Image (tube, rainbow, N blue to C red; front, side, top):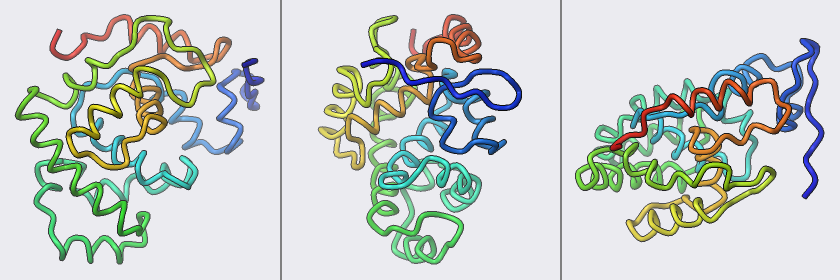
Length: 206
């Protein structure tokens, strides 16, 4: 598959082609420049991304990104220990919250997954230690993929553990965003910074 043309905004710094989906959107570009592809070891941030990828299904990431702060408030900062205790009243509250995506199935899946996350952390020590076990070998993932053998393996294992909305495409997006791979396009101005962050990153559990 041939690489997509880079996106060139007015600042003259070439970026990954997907940035063209919201040209001129400062929040979107900041997410690409400062977050996407940088390795993460914080369990709450990782759980947040797992949840938000599920909420994104059928929507654009820009839609989710603009609602992210409201999601954080609604879901207790994505502290899965707290979210796992959410009940019917919380579901009803969330369905009335215009700041988030009000989809009952996705809301209930996020609460369900929080319980599975508590179980996983009890077993493995942390969500980060578990997820980073699935980091693929260096330079083994080609660009422009929607999923990979590593994301398929992660998806399969999470499904066996009872998680929902964790298909291989969703898990590949998680790996891209949380720095388990550096999927910035060759030539993207931020590829080098993401790679340096990965090179200096202490893998959880290592």
